[in-house]
Image 1: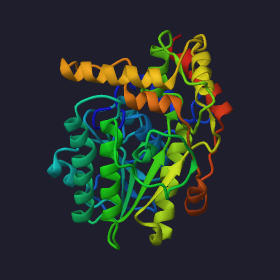
Image 2: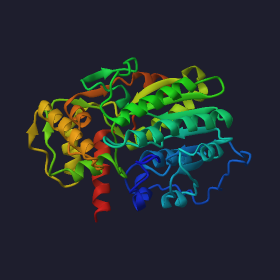
Image 3: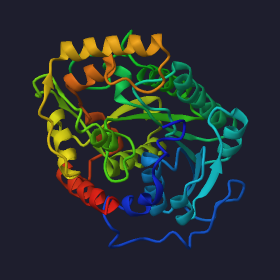
Image 4: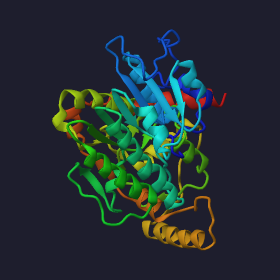
Length: 375
């Protein structure tokens, strides 16, 4: 995603997927919800909320959940999204790099969810810095000068990934001294900025959901399916990871806002978020492939070989200024061969978070969506 929270390639699917990942048997219509503009006075108990990247995968799920709870929601993205029009969501088109536009969109809100980011495993570090660091600073400044009391920031567990196994670690694990990719590096800078910005006037929380997936996914699932024929298992396949089903990720964000307002002493903290069910990474990949009607990954390579290929590929791509993603990078090799699952006790205790959709339930919904979207 390029600065608007994975808001590319969503299309018509969003209307069918953000009801929990299956066709809406009990569809709640937002057609009759009156449009709210930020300069109007609230007339009910709902909050006036802005979601950056509100048209993307996670952003849309958060928007939908907020609407279901009776809040007035606006989206700030680089482009308009038809499904948000269908939900009667006010859409503000702009770039997080434009401080004035960001401040104007934020002014007077009751809460801001900063979801927009540039993700990926390869690319120009300046582009990542612009969206993830400068963009976050602009959102923080907009909240500070616009009188916004609550800021919920979407971070990533990769901000603490050091290239080795991380099994059951909690939020006390430190930031590494070295990053092998611009995404975790710039997201770590952004997360630290949000934590530092916490004050009595601006309460902040950062969430670290791991490997978000589900119906409507325009990043992880399509990436796995696209590379199905080329995938090779890295390592012996016993490394475990956490994943986060899309509805669970959205739920955690909304619960974070409620908890932060009720308990201001939580301000400045970070929380790992997951389905609370570590799985073998390659079993999960094969289940996604199965849901898409693809065969499982059978070929293998050692972690050492993968890292060597990644190292060479990165050198070649930088040397010849090749823009598209290499077949392997050091960061991807490390991610595919190590365990990274987390202790989410803090989120359970402080935010009241409990995943509502299991991996089995989510996988059934994903399979159904994949069938419908390719029918």
